[in-house]
Length: 433
Image (cartoon, rainbow, N blue to C red; front, top):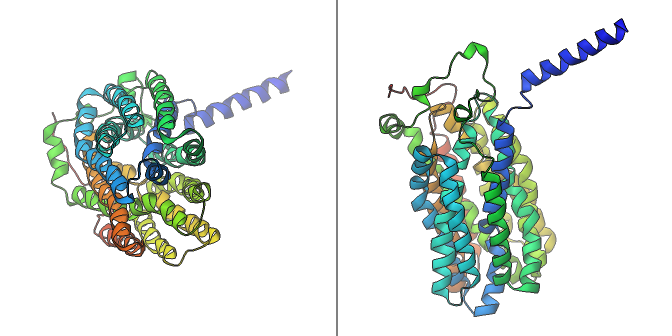
């Protein structure tokens, strides 16, 4: 009996030590799970746009350039409203902001499903869904980061995996649904069920550990009490961030990186179909990219959090820029799938470290506004990168020049990464509110 008591005491102590060290039961992981589900639903419509091009062209006779313009409008609207969405998240809270964005998402999906002209498609998919995506996706990443004092990398990495898992699970399914039910019915069904899922998740969401009355994940007794002045958004402290060169470099980096991969996300399926692959086979390219990028989306923020974010971002941009050159000579299913594997790894790590580097530069100060401006640069890049391939194909009948634009944009972004400051200490000093 004594031995059993000692054994039970030691086991209980070990479990408590593990739980204290890794805080396995911390509510931050519920927030990460909720954010992941919302990201999975929200990112799918943008990331599977390439699947829509051929069915829409066959249904309405629209050119690839005309359809690509819808993607560009959506990306542009997301970009223009991202700073506003970030500010709304900082002022009113991420939960209220995302609830409003989800309502717009439902309206946009229904209107897109009922579009019968190119102008209706531009309004529904481009404007309404573009704005909605910024409002319900921009505030969630800064909110999740705010739940972590330490371990930001593993929290961010876990959430960012959803950007790959969502499309990986849905790309093939949507391609099949488009073929059997039509893209309009597919949009209607996905819009309704997606909205229900997001609303259900937000019912359990909390903006910050402080609002829930607990300490952030990784907070130690030696840290003392949180400095509330640094946790409340203010124009004065936000202006301090605006004056740093790193703030502007990160916007620039987002822009060039998104030009680089938007060209591929929009054009690679039409490109493969043009080479003789079926729509389902071509859709497999995006599926492979999504699946392969899961590992780098998870690992990159963790490595960046521990060893510094700059090298990870640089290598991701470099790999993304070099791997797309494979497409210049790709003709077979094997070659396209090989490209998908080699491109997926750097693509996954290209933007997922950004929340971590923001934390390393600016601390736990609310980053909704900061992150919103960075997504402004990303959205402009996505708009240009999404529009360019279709126009180039309509004019030249080839995607070769678009591939070069993708490669050069990513490589240029890699050079800008080298201009970033080191991440070993905060680069701002905040004023008391």
